[in-house]
Length: 241
Image 1 (spheres, one colour):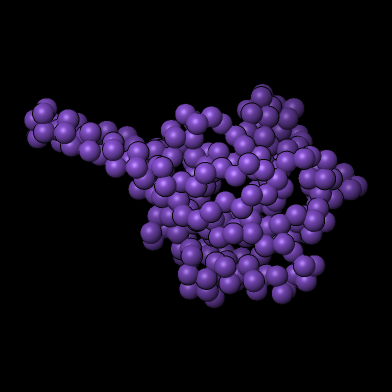
Image 2 (cartoon, rainbow, N blue to C red):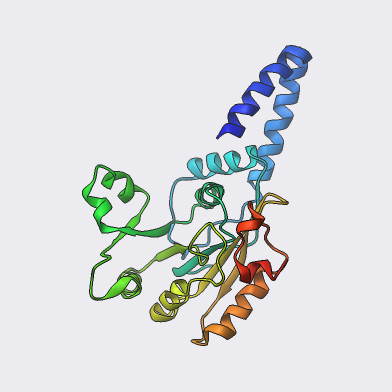
């Protein structure tokens, strides 16, 4: 958001230095470039759980490009999936991923504590499709997530396998256990802070062999990501650099 404010200040300075007519011509060409870049987003496949309108998607696409970011890859046409995002080393990860996903128009649900729905945040949580999970339930976090996925015709659940922004020795296995239990594909997203690109790396149907499938997932990420904070990168991803 600070970047957008900064751009407004720079444009004001440019207008003063360039003169109104030259500035307006520059601004028209700049808007044309942004709109052309926004059109490079892939079309939303018909089976996906969708969010937003054509207008809102266009707005978020432009917001992403205004911050110097772009999107690469094709979105798999899947009614259900576990969407994973790596690397996760900064709070900015969620910001860029959220803008990109809203620009795509994919409805990705996240799991949250049921206790949050007893607070004034409930309307907002429902609006962004946070799914309440009972932390103390006998069925457990993973089993509840599996049941939720099985009960819906269309749903993507988003998870960060690293589980924390700080350095981790291993990835959390929850994303894999949910995908395996619900028999849905794992859709892979990557953040590249060097090239400022949010990428969709495709989908993988889990076989039930975690180690084998993890090797395949990491192969997809090879050369496709770069963290905001290198020192906090998880060990499995660090080995890919």
